Length: 318
Image 1: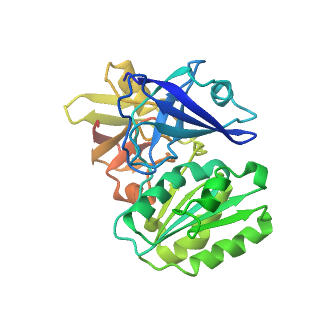
Image 2: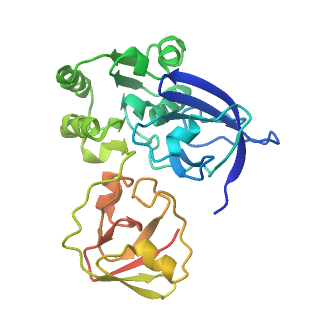
Image 3: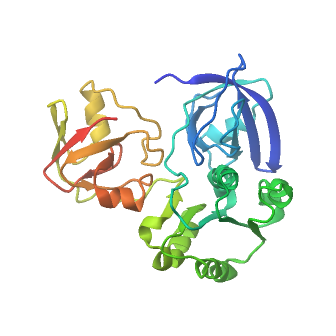
């Protein structure tokens, strides 16, 4: 699927290792609005494709903003984007959502650590605009690693809603999270993004209060999976075509080898681009993109990593 060429209209150094890139179409046509919590595919100058969360106001139409952290072990993606200059051209995909503001919650709590602030920032903009009851809790190692610190401390949309914990020792984080959990109900929604261990701690503390289907996460890393016991199964499309999926192959790769066009991006179960409907059978979820509620429903599957518990799956490509 082809992308959109955009120009880097502005670059802001949020921290020594995090840059905000503001992107615009050369012809001035709008890129937004979009749903809060969305991310986009970004293909940088090295040709490497990665996903980045949108972190500006979702109602903004002229530009899109992403924040890129330079990773020490980068395979070239984040390092290349850190070498961009204003006026450079890159390619992006259309915004799409795994994470998003849910309707009907009595209170919304956004809990971020590190670069995990990016998807939650756009959600804070939306929650403020709608007049919803929300709090944004942001934990960072020190001020030099705190992206958007000035905005969060001084903009009227956020300063009464944000709880910044800069330099909070790991052993004290649990106490802060427990104090937040004590203010929630079964009708509250919790959204979290950050390192895997941090998100696991958040889920462990808030789930007994709000229930697992009211905890929403955004992952930047693929799930670790033991595939030693994998067996073959059959996938049938709603068109009637049927394919055998060997123990050592993914559904996505088999479909592609047989000329079936499937939208894909990360191929690691993170971005959600290849998620398809399950019409029959029981999926074995191995992704980090579907929510707990989505997985429990059993009517969707990430074709790049997930498999089947039943001998056959009947799916509908989206």
